[in-house]
Image 1: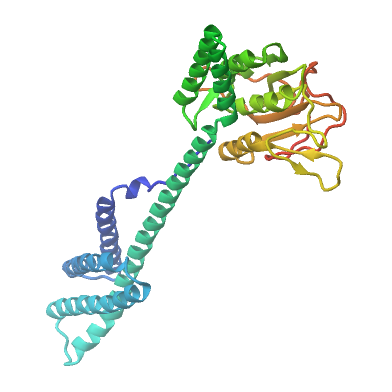
Image 2 (image 1 turned 135 degrees about the vertical axis):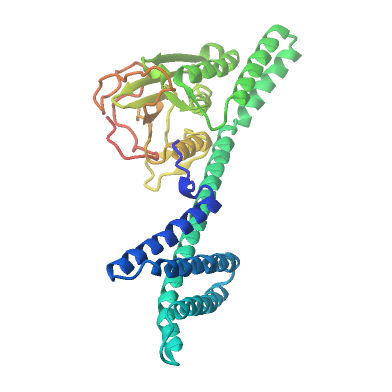
Length: 411
C-alpha cells in the first residue's frame, strides 16, 4: 500500500529561519524598488538615507506586529481580526509619523500645515505596505497550520489503517484452534503420544510463524505457500486421506508480493465447507500465475459448493428469488477488508460455485516483487484465462460474481 504523507515544504522546515529570510528579502526588495523609483525621478543620493530609515522603521514595526499576530492567530476570529485591525492602524500611524518627521527634518515644509498633509499622505501608503505584510503573514501561517493538520490527519489515517490490518491479520479462526487442541487432547487420552506430539509441534510452528510475521507486511507467494504447508500439515493429521491438496505456482508468480496470511483463511474455508461435510473429503487446489501486469491466485475445492440449504461459509444470506443461498463468511469478509485496505479499488475478488458443486475464490492483484533484481511478468494477455485443471472450477454455469474491487471481465 502506497502512502503519501503531507510534510512541510523544505523552505518552511525551520520556521524561524524562513521568517527571517522572508523579512530580509521582502523589505530589501521594497528598499530596492523605491530606490530605483527615486533615481528614475532624479532624486539626490542623500534620499537613499531617508528611504533606508523608512525601510528599517517598517522592518522593526513588522517584528513587533509578528509578536502580536503570533498570539492572535490562535484566538477566536472576532478577537483575531478586531485586534489585528487595531494593531495595524496604530503601527501604520507610528510608521507614518516617523517617516514624516524624517522627511520634515531633511526638507522642512514651508507651511504650518505641511506636516499634517505629509503625515496623511504617507499614512495611507504605510498602511497599505503593513496591511500587505500582515496579509502575507497570516496567509503563510494559516497555510502551515493547514499543512500540519493534514500531515497529522494523514499519519492518524496511516496508523488506523495499520491497526485495521493488524486486527484483520490476527483474526485466527477459534474453531481451528479448538479443533486442533481437541484432537491433541483426544490423542493424549488414547495414549498416542507420538501423533499428539507431532501435531503439537506443527501447531507451535504455525503459530510462531504467524506471530513473527509483520501484521501489515507482505510476503512472497512462495513464503505464503510455506505457511499454508504448516497449516495443512496440522489438518492432514486430522482428516488424513480425506484432505487432498494440489498446488500449481507458475514462475514468476512465486516471487510476487501479497499481504501475509492472505490465503490461509481461504484454505481454512475450503476445509470447513468442502472437506468436512463429505465422507470422501475433497481436493483443495491453489493456482498462482502472472497474467499480464497482474497476479492471479485461485483457491478452489471439490466440495458441495453453495447450494440451497447447504453451507458455503460462516454465515448465510438467503436469495430473495429462492434459487440459491449465497454466503461469504467471516473469513472471506476478512480477506475483502484486507484487500480494500491494502489496494483500494486496484484489486479483483470473485467467488464462483458451479451448479454441479465445487467452490472457488479468485483474487487478482497488481504484480509486485520485493526490491532486488527485476522479475519480468509473463507476456500473457491482460485477461488470459488460467489453464484448465481437473480440480479448478468448471467453466459451466456459475453463480453471479460476488466481491469487491475494480470491475473487470472474468477472463
